[in-house]
Image (cartoon, rainbow, N blue to C red; front, side):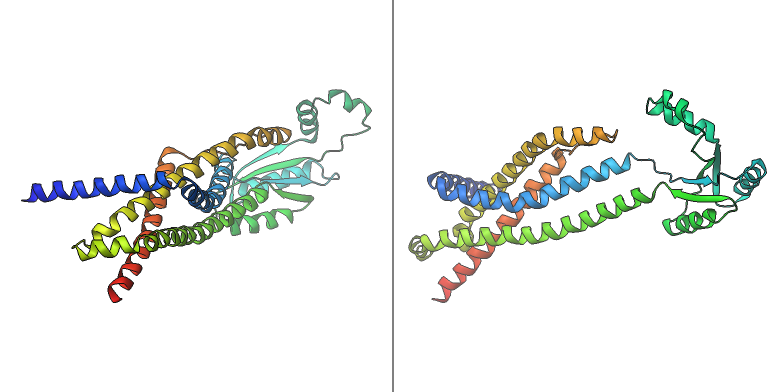
Length: 307
């Protein structure tokens, strides 16, 4: 009995799936418009997600250990430099410090920018002596306090916190991730509402057929099943359409992004959706559209039973 029951259930699902596919094909214009609306609702949070993830991947390639650079005053002599070096060596929060003489800094600058001949026109070296400091692992607040403390050392003209801009980037990424979650919730709700309205119109258009089916003993599950498959097809197709659209936009945008990044001697590109992420997108879209169909059919079937 169990095997017969399972076979019958599989037959009913196959029949409902086939019926939903035929309905989708018989209404090409209406189905296409619904697909475009669903794909648009998926594309906006998907595009923001890929942008934020690409920024996060690029940010993760940056130096993870922040550095503080101390620029000494021009009047600092060897005694001042030795005193600063000794202070940094004994500091409990400094993991490593490197002294960069002004002459070496100028040579490195000229070599990096291919300006070797420019030194002949300079009367004197305009660059200061510097110390490059690698702090020990500590929270951002402690790094800020260390930066402020070291900038107050004797004969230190200024202190540059090299990870300050990276901290702003990571804050921006966190904001983008939060916006992605908010957009995903908002447009996920829109996905349910669009499907709810689409299935509701279909049920109303077939109200007489459904009422006759109920009179001859059709259950609510039997009536609901084709609409659920229809919504599932639409959700999956909309997800595929949004996925394909994101790949096309990334292919169009990446050359311009790479050219812009090259101006700053960096490499950056938007990354496409991975297979696992694409599978998750298909699953979420299918679940949300099926939920919308379930709500629509449940509401209308209850109304018919009440009438």
